Image 1 (cartoon, helix red, strand yellow):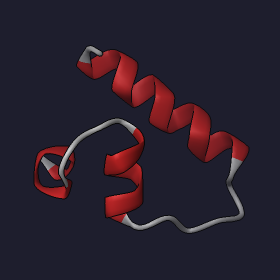
Image 2: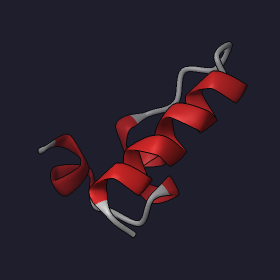
Image 3: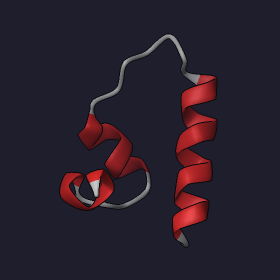
Length: 40
């Protein structure tokens, strides 16, 4: 999965779950990254 594909997946997820406040770890797990690498 490319960086653009990961970001697209995150943006789509956030759009569908806008009322939730996921942690950084939850978003990172969604695209198969560690919190450290997702944050970078």
